[in-house]
Amino acid sequence: MKQDAEAYVKKCDKCQRYTPIPHMPSETLNPIKSLWPFAQWRIDIVGLLPIVVAQKKFLLVATDYFSKWVEAKAYTSIKDKDITKFVWKNIVYRFGIPQTIIVDNGPQFDSAAFRTFCSELKIKNLYSTPWYPQSNGQTTPRRPTAPFTLAYGMDKIIPMEIGMPTTQTAMQGQKDENQELGKHLDWEDEVRENASIRMVGYQQKTAAHYNRKARPRTFKVGTLVLRKIFENTVENRVGKLQANWEGPYIVSKASESGTYHLQKLDGTPFLRPWNVFNLKQYYQ
Image (cartoon, rainbow, N blue to C red; front, side, top):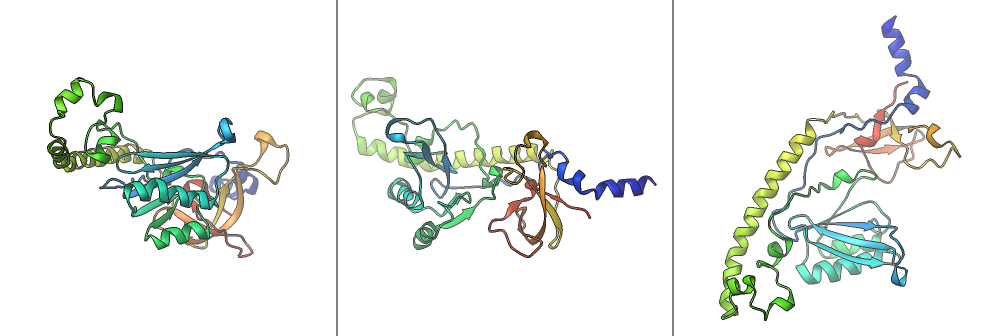
């Protein structure tokens, strides 16, 4: 009788739609490793920001996975042509053509113009799943080596310090700039290698701590699932009484990275994949 009651409750449609959203990780953390500066970049759009001069309320931010070097620019609105121009001027011109650019599924990134731009430059374009920022693989360690040093192979000095007898300029010396620059270039590879080792160690510790709480779950193709509701556009004025899950949908394709392609019951597919963290199995 107890098993029959559990089975009945498990298949209750209302119970499944209003059940609380779990906050435990649904898959293990797999940090993205970058072994060289400016090879992999993550690009995000930040906004809406408080309106300032020229009505600029969006920020386009690019972060290098290795050095954590940041390039940013403010816009009134951001379109695919703005992103293409930003990558060309702020990344390609300054640091060379990257191997990989990781972005979300926003229409500015998932456009024909941006895909063509990346394809022409042989840039691998990766997309993270919606509503799951952890899929970008970024972990930010406390780095004792400054991003400027990793990027340029020397400590930063502000223009005012160049002609002043400060401790930093006195130690570096200003007698022979070419000789000093050569020393820094020889030292650059060693600094980057040490920083890479520290970053890998930090990522391993972070992943071990994260994975202790993980409760992995997987779905097979054809499984019915419910998807977490983020913006309720069906029920009006329900507030906190709204359902937490919607569907059911059918899993049409599964990948090893914990993402799943879904389709409606009538066979209509969704354009973008969803992470397992935002899905749960539906019983009937």
